[in-house]
Image (cartoon, rainbow, N blue to C red):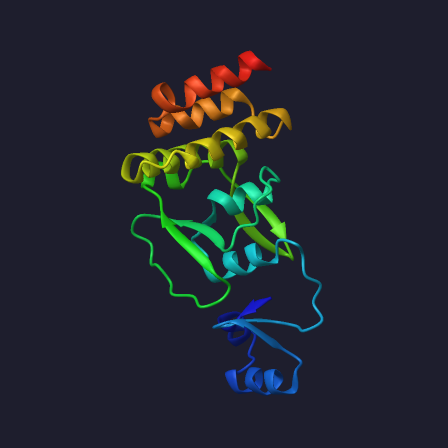
Length: 195
């Protein structure tokens, strides 16, 4: 998988890429992103494509949960976090939902995974769970919908049971996000007491 700019750096012109596309020796995945037609695709192919298209983004929320195998839901699009002042690209395909994270929360809890030879930044399970709690709290406040908090609680339960996150990691990120006392601590204590 290569961007147009990478082809140009290698001395391959846009006209050559166009001819290769017409002959069927190169597929266009998205604007400015190409791949060989016989390339082996990973089950997380869409995450690699999103990371290649949005170089300053990080896989978050439901997409990160699915990657870490902490949900049965299949996200309808790739969730990507960008910084508060980062450029927000307009991408037709794949379907990408972009959300902005503040400067304090954006840079924490990122781990890089290699998918199809591409380094893909994805938030750790503990950070993802705390982000879901924060998002769920906003949903509850604005729309009076408690489902986001229930989903985050289930993800936290699964992460601890599967040993993908520890209570102390979750507590650390929750304290940094300012949601430890009222949102995460009561739920985490309930889970650990019932275990």
